[in-house]
Image 1 (spheres, rainbow, N blue to C red):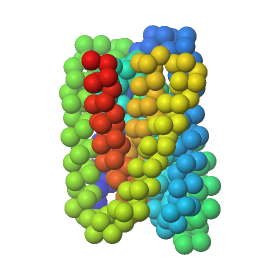
Image 2 (cartoon, helix red, strand yellow; image 1 turned 60 degrees about the vertical axis):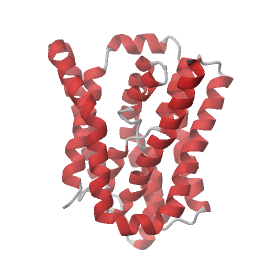
Image 3 (cartoon, rainbow, N blue to C red; image 1 turned 180 degrees about the horizontal axis):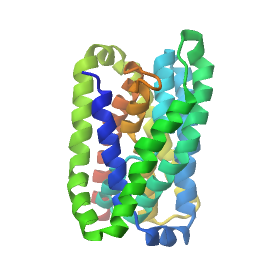
Image 4 (cartoon, rainbow, N blue to C red; image 1 turned 30 degrees about the vertical axis):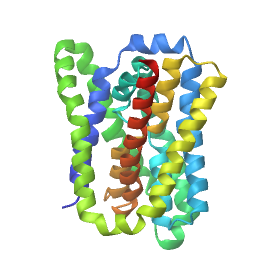
Length: 283
């Protein structure tokens, strides 16, 4: 079974659900206090890719995993971050807004960074990036579903709310199903590389959330904003990374998606621990 036919509808549903939750008034409230957005976007768009590049070099990752690690680091915030922010007593409006902003900005940053990373380590081993196909796929699977969700929210608010309740409950089980199927198909490769990739991914998550937390304190974000920034920066859209890696129109490499699968597992473990610690602290 080719997992691309599973991940594509999952990604589309997740982005459609994000559109259902967007409120223009949320943007107004958050932009009145811009520092949380600056810190979070710096963490996601600058520090994550740079740290991923550094770790990939230090660990001497093979090109396919090198590109896969950079790919997951380039992706926008994960759709479940607002749920984690709510559990951690964070700013949910900020979380939704950050996910939306990063999802739009990365439509432009992913092609640039991935083109550079592919030229750096991939072309010598036959890995190339059709940038036009990447842009087209992201527009169809990322931007269009968000716009449709926003449209439904304003045209039919009650229907959008009911749809969101269903889709938000399906998000995590769908991702878990995808990871399970992927593991069954590629368990040997995953187990053979879990040591170095697990170390890379865990170090990436811990370093970037530590840095984003320190920056949040430096600019004096509120505790609620700081918790949301930590979660938003640490939780990446693994479904998008898997879709890009395994798409027959782009890299056509399920092996390249393995860093994203391991990242998805580790980010949930790390952030669940973070939420547990935070809840004990604020209770």
